[in-house]
Length: 93
Image (cartoon, rainbow, N blue to C red; front, side, top):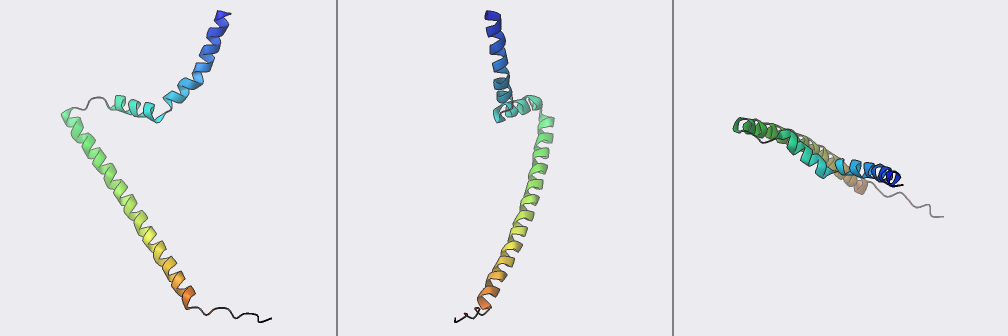
């Protein structure tokens, strides 16, 4: 019976371990372990890589802001045009 209990315990622990390993904390720990301890020369490369990533993110954000501005201008024009249109006549019936 104890062998069956151990097998059942292991079977129940597998999904729990899977959830823990797939968590954001476990991913962060794995990334930190992959990077290892930076040496001075690799630290410069790491900073350059981070800087390049940030530049790319800024470009994406600038593009998104520009699209939002254009959408805002379009909506403002629609609102102004709707205010300038005369109201539909009532049926009077």
